[in-house]
Length: 130
Image (cartoon, rainbow, N blue to C red):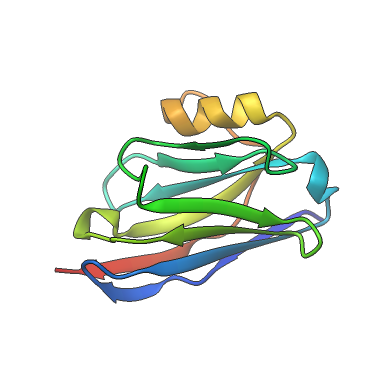
């Protein structure tokens, strides 16, 4: 079975940093683009960032650009999201998801809920205090 396990969330004060990890199993990891998404209570899913299968391409939504950095280690089947300068509006459950097409993934990250990813993991809670 395909599994995507997100970890690294927690409680952090405004201006602080966290690094999230997404460890993937059950699929050929280096054939898949990975996206990060988030959902706050009562709000729609938001795309955050994505990365192509061999790190050639990355994309960030405007509200995280310059603060977050996505990376991956294909030897460990893991994608990372380094989150700096966190603020209260970043509070959400963060999910990672996989799709073979980077173009599709970037579209999903950039346009919200119109399209879907192939595989979703369980989220990790990020809470930023004021």
